[in-house]
Amino acid sequence: MFVSGLILSLFAILGTSIVGITHDSTAAKIADNEKMAKLRRLNQILPHDQYDNDLLNTTLIIAPDDRLGQRKPSTVYIASQQAKISAMIFSVIAPKGYSGEIKMLVGINMDGSVAGVRIVSHKETPGLGDAVEIERSNWVLGFNMHSLLNPEEKNWKVKRDGGYFDQFTGATITPRAVVQAVRLCLVYFNRHKQTLIDQYLQSIQKTTSKK
Image (cartoon, rainbow, N blue to C red; front, side, top):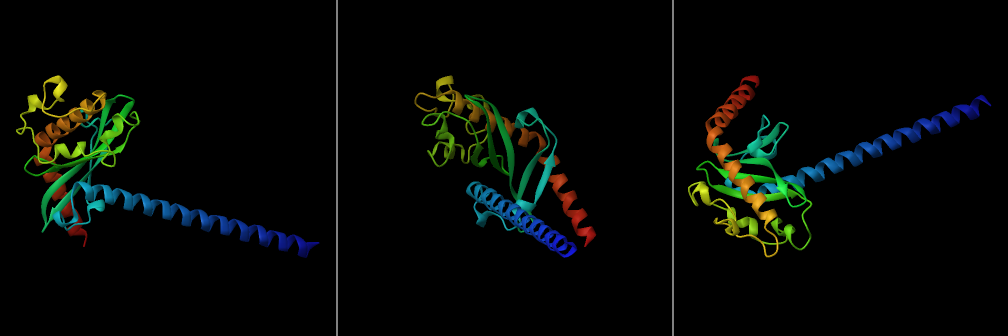
């Protein structure tokens, strides 16, 4: 009886260990997949030949700000080449999509021009509002290299509102929300650029001093 109980206990322990190992392995695989997916999206905004640092792990955490649509601290990815910052990629939320929030990444070159925009998630109408996705249309490429001076800020609207940027046939609310979000991100960058640079340099100094 004692031997049978011992054997059952051993099997139970072994089974629990296998489940634990499998869970850890699955969680690690999911984390790796998410990391690679995020890196692919970042590289769509900023090709790898435009930076030489570890982009995923070179980040700043910034305070919540309405211009970024963020109610919680958010991440800024810092791209650099030969130790000089080449661009910053912001996590942005457009709160006024047709079906709710539109989450995106907005890359900004250090001259204040847009490096690229990619949609991370949304609930917009299939066949209409989902044209904000690069997989559905090239619409988001229309932001590339534009700044608050080109076109001037007052024209950062869709054409239906008298602005510069195209809307979609049968869908205006979604592109309007994205254009507004990108504009506000540019405003945030222009006002906080030097603070972000200083924060980055301080983080580099702290890292160097620990070595």
